[in-house]
Amino acid sequence: MEKILNYINGALVEPINNAYLDNYNPSIGKVYNQIPDSNEKDIDLGYNAANEAFSGWSKTPKEERSKIMMRIADLIEENLDELAKAESMDNGKPVKLAAHVDIPRAASNMRFFATAILHYASESHEMDGVAINYTLRKPIGVVGCISPWNLPLYLFTWKIAPALASGNCVVAKPSEVTPMTAYLFSKLCVEAGLPKGVLNIIHGMGPSVGSPITTHPGIKAISFTGGTATGKAIAKVAAPMFKKLSLELGGKNPNIIFADCDFDKALKTTMLSSFANQGQICLCGSRIFVERPIYEKFRDAFVAKTKQLKVGNPNDADTNLGAIVSKAHLEKVLSYVQLAQEEGGTVLAGGNKVQLEGELSEGYFMEPTIIEGLAFDCRTNQEEIFGPVVTIMPFDTEEEVVDMANSTEYGLAATVWTQDVGKSTRLGASLASGIVWVNCWLVRDLRTPFGGVKNSGVGREGGFNALNFFTEQTNVCIKL
Ligand code: NAD
Image (cartoon, rainbow, N blue to C red):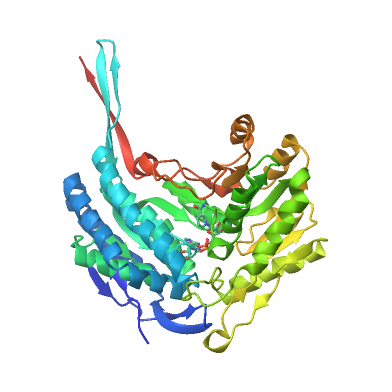
């Protein structure tokens, strides 16, 4: 059985303890390769390699760093088919989605930060003939990047790219649930000539690999994307060590549909914002609020379209939903359907595991699910489910829907459908959310601030925000 390897000091290596974990293909429900079960000793090796490489990499001219990153981006594109198939096999998502979204975005992440660093400038403050101050932005040193399973290579590169571009060396941990494309990426880094030690990718579990990254005294900044509970645990250990922290956490996003919306566009996009990637995108709109005059019309059309979605083989071009990422996660998502019914909800579509045939008979498939009749403040409407399950509710006034939308502990993304500019600007201001999309969803400009408020996170990624995070400032004041 194929073994995934760690990438440390420029080489693909076995974990020190030679222990491995099983890696499952969720579409067939079977182990298909093995992943290093690394521990703090591998993190020490990775850290030492990164620390050694730092002096060279941080002094490498930006143009040279940029060129190497552009080569990595080119290689991602040249290997798009292989990477998309690997992402699908590891995560369960349709190959088509990985080929159109995940892998192209990984290349864009590398290219975006490879060029952003060339345009990165800092401030100067002149003091009326007394002195001039200028701000130096220096790389931090060795930084840690930890990412989740839902958009594996997409989110892994979203962190690594700005860290490397700004001259840091990295110890990175992909999710143990979806390690494959990070492994293929490490091979591409070798091929592109990334100097040894600049990036170290170490595989394994959260407690044995993620935790030693966050507690390592030499790793001075942590960029983390994952669940809110894990973010809280990381903050608890990293804050007293005065590490810089960027936390991108969970969401429970509202999708607000006003009666004056472009109905067809709202419906078409709601299909995606509800069920793309099996609903396993932190930005999915899982609470749908529809203004009462169009509630029944929208609900019926949405239910009808949802029933037509195909749950099936991720390799088929006409598959809309592939497999849920793991057996444990499928069980968690199904338990929320049960909870919703206990809380008085009615399942309008889906609600069940899907039994496919042949090779896929043991796979973790689930119907796209719509639930009606729940109070906005019940558990189903307050807790992150992170699967193909949405709730739908009517509302009467703008004030009421803003209150319901803002009622959760989360505040990552919101979607608003209206033709009224005044209403969209008012909601843009009153929704407690890091991102508000009006008449669209998941339209991403990589220059914009990305992140959440409340328990959805701390800090912002994207554009110069990410370069600011991965640099330390020194103000130099020169007396005139
Ligand atoms: P998770 O928190 O379980 O794991 C994320 C990563 O953290 C994994 O690599 C895991 O191994 C590691 N980890 C686990 N315990 C750790 C510890 N104690 N110390 C350090 N690292 C540890 O999250 P997940 O289940 O992989 O991902 C799903 C979650 O991610 C959802 O809550 C989703 O909303 C969130 N997410 C957020 C964003 C965003 O941008 N805000 C994007 C994608 C996913």
